[in-house]
Image (cartoon, rainbow over all chains, first blue to last red; front, side, top):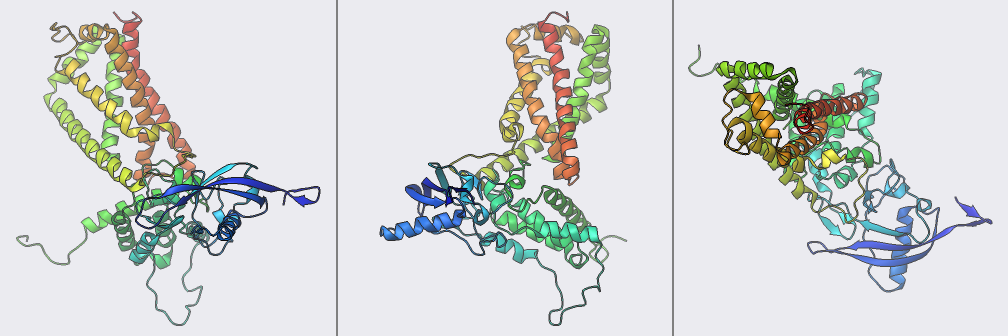
Amino acid sequence: MVQENGKEQTLALKLRVWRQRRGQPGAFEEHALAAVPTSASFLEMMDMLNEQLIKEGKDTFAFDHDCREGICGMCSMTINGMPHGPIPGVTTCQLHMRNFRDGETITVEPWRARAFPVLKDLAVDRSAFDKVIQSGGFITVRTGSAPEANNIPVPKPIADEAMDAAECIGCGACVASCKNGSAMLFVGAKINHLNILPQGQAERDRRTLAMVKTMDEAGFGNCTNYGECQAHCPKSITLDVIAKLNRDYLRARVKEFFSSTGKPSKGGD
Amino acid sequence: MALSGLVLAGFVLGHMSGNLLMFKGPEAINAYAAWLHANKGLLWGARIVLVVSTLAHLWTGIQLTLENRASRDGGPAVDATRRATLSSRTMPYSGVVILAFAVFHLLHYTFRTVALGGVEFGDNVHGMLIAGFSSKPVAVFYIVSMILLCLHLSHGVSSVFQTLGLRNERWRARLDCLAQLYAWVVALGFISIPLAVLLGLLK
């Protein structure tokens, strides 16, 4: 906490916040907000703005948030053009106002991508990610009693790599930061998380093909190796997952192309 | 995109290496040109592969650019690019200029219908190049196009590895370096000839 003479520093801010109703064109609205403590999180600052709007008898801004401790992936604001704001490796809820200057103008807008239509103001519909997960982001196991944890040995480096990929919280900052609106970092993380573990082998090729197909159908763009996703990911997932997604996809396509039909071909001997 | 790009990137290196025979004298480059033309199978095989690769590269490039523009949906009101390089952001533009250049270049030195003043050079490739690059605007256009080719290759060559899944964080910096080196070698090799003619070093 930044303190001066025993009192916490506060900021006076000028906010340009996106206002939009579903299916209608949106625009920025300007609001002045005074006495924002530097220890407040960005979402707490947005709460202050909404309280001020309620007192003024105006509509509040809708925005997504849930755990407010950086692990749920719900918060989703583009702050001064950067998804999750100026500090690499943190989510909006973990971004603190001490990273802004007194008197600064802050532009707050929703994720911008065709696959993420605006629901209201700063809240976007991210169900395209759910569809991608539903198409292959799972393993088939017998449910019921928990299996013995050490039945399937997992080498430590593989476990570490899978955990690195599993860090993805599915917030969509990769799509919002990508100049192509591509979801390759998200899909790459999810596919890698399962494809390298022994438990994920049974559906490995089917998973890869299905998740990529669903991703394309949802209207996400293609990867052209800008690297913006890695630079904006709040969990610092690297482009490695995209290279491995490409590798697994090529492998699955080749295997699918030469798959056996189990029958002799007609006219053959 | 990656596979057709790989063929085209390989071709420009080969083409550039052949061109450097200009510095060995008229006999060397003319003999090389005559050898290429004598091997009809090699010449036409290469031409067909190049035309197919170019069309594939164009088609996938246009599709990629249109799809990606639509997916972006305008983008944020404030631009805050963190990492995307100039070369990665200008791929469609550098590509279009290189295509226009390639068309001009074919008309210039392969079909020999433009910018040569109607002079017949026959098998004298050396004389044709000197005459062609003696025109300042033509030489400058060649040099500028090759700088854009350098920009295009410096992103394209390292992207090939990513698309084929042959890259990781450890190798990314090394491959980016390799791509830069490749792009500069190709571009400077090509540029050396019009530049040498402009400076009067090649006569």
